[in-house]
Length: 123
Image (cartoon, rainbow, N blue to C red):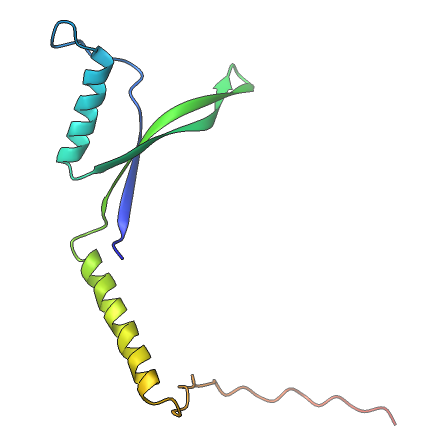
């Protein structure tokens, strides 16, 4: 199983200037953002609209919503190798147990603990 790291950024709420006449400035702004994250190795997953409690005035607050863009990429170059190694080790352990079904399960050593004190019995 591949491990991922995630990046969540707010969706743009303002547009840049349109470079081409007749094009949608918001679409261009969003496209530029997605392309820049992609160049950094992030894969776009989805947009989520989440509730957000914002301050309103000095003591008040109000509920609002914010659209966030979710990206992911593999956690590191050796993350997949670590997962494969752990899977191989687990499979070897299972194969060894299947080959010797009568073998006792390994016991973890128990630390030496003193016996609990004996309680006096009523006469």
